[in-house]
Image 1 (tube, rainbow, N blue to C red):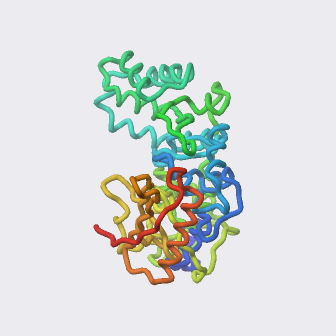
Image 2 (image 1 turned 90 degrees about the vertical axis):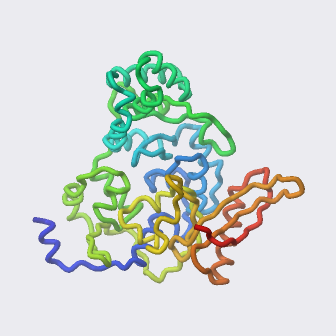
Length: 383
């Protein structure tokens, strides 16, 4: 009844540009925020972290005066961690969210087992989960060792499938030094409860679906039900939105889709200036809506991917404008690195200058010690 009543009431229309500015404000991309790295990780409901460096680039684009060592220190002190959650991909979350979001995302993570059915034939998954938990809680295990131990117990199983099953069935954290700034380390795993000092005898506190909706809207709204389902890959969330309808505002986009939002969330004027921003591969800004035209112009759809790999991207006037690549120096006779910027379309001189300035700012906070300076170079987009 609530939805039928809402359909009879005219709902304000948010233009694509208005949606863009609202989303950028939630994503801390309209202006850099003066907040701690931990608060930002919480607000953003985690950072995509399939690779090690992207969380640092994400916060560098969003926080005023961000120092990579701040996030690295949070990882070292176990206040944040790396684990598989939303969309069954690796994210950097606070310890609290690692424990609360993994149960929320568990149906999606566990659905991956369908792709490894052949390699798990005859394997009792409950026994595999219990044995894997025993192994990684006795001591954190490198992935290679976990595969070997599981293959020894189930010699007829496929080692990779066995390890994937352990990751799907258990909330496994990638422990440090992997993920630390300027450090390297192989994937080594233990349970979230063990790593964060939670009581492993109690079930982790699963975030309520209603709270997940509110947090999603705070970081990515205004948004539709389908948008949130794209963000987390869970389905059948419409009833959750309906239960919250009286607490939310509703709008329509230019295509007529219903959008929900928090009453007190920022919705800046569509004419609000949006400075250039450099984003890493797999930034959640580009992955968390079913309709991505609020950030990705239709003409540029698909240009940020090569196979299943994502390019690093940059925004101009709030919208996807091209890709970038960073190469450290160190070659004989050339100590400078190069930031190569490839725009999908023509940039004005003022836009090029602003992009170059933002690139230099990013490099100033994230450059490696081996490349004390960089040159910013603009190149044509090929592809």
